[in-house]
Length: 295
Image 1 (cartoon, rainbow, N blue to C red):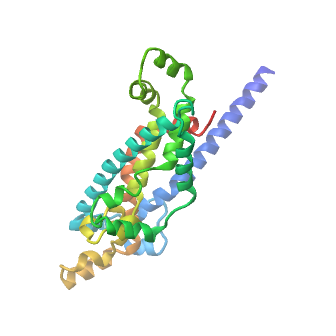
Image 2: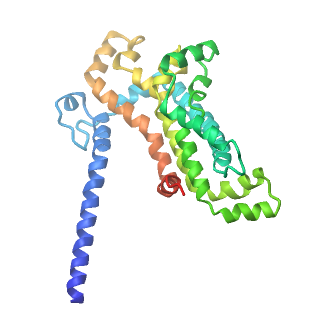
């Protein structure tokens, strides 16, 4: 009987591992295909011969992108946007979530402010009022047009509110008895205990700022100020051909197509997030689960 149960357990475990392996491969297949196309020959990509391995391996698409003078500029614009926008999101999220996580007896206007932020999730002014506001404030072609409209990430605030509420009330009561004020409680108790939730909302902010391209398209007037995602959305094969000879143009068009170039854009655009995510992944599931449950 024990041997029979052990055999069934091993079979179930092996089947489960096989299923997880298949699901993991299916999840990675689009990424592998995109990487393969970006390194493949133009004709092979157009003929649909590429699977998960490059056909006619070359780096023409990456060479074309990296040689463009605006590429590095747009890359650093995105880095600045992530750093500045992520810092603003972090500070506002924490400073809003902590008081809103307190009881009404501690913060009498809590429900009023909660209604304000919930309304912003349901209703939006739209693109045109935002465009007019940015123009009126003179923020076109500045980094502030990219970070201020998303300065208050309401979803992240609600996530952190619920996480703060899950922290045992006894800790707050003990702090009040010892004479700790709100700032001391926030800095010494709540923030250190909230590493998973803070890592989760930080990851959300980084991904949102890095992947956003439409605001750069409507608020930036010169390509030098484009963030990376806006730049690669606008970049086509002909972009880099103004200052080269006709012979070089023909040679480049023989080697490169918009299909392989677009694949290279996608790879470059997702690479920084793929490098950051493993460091925050261990906090992510824990933070999203605890922050999504309300007592």
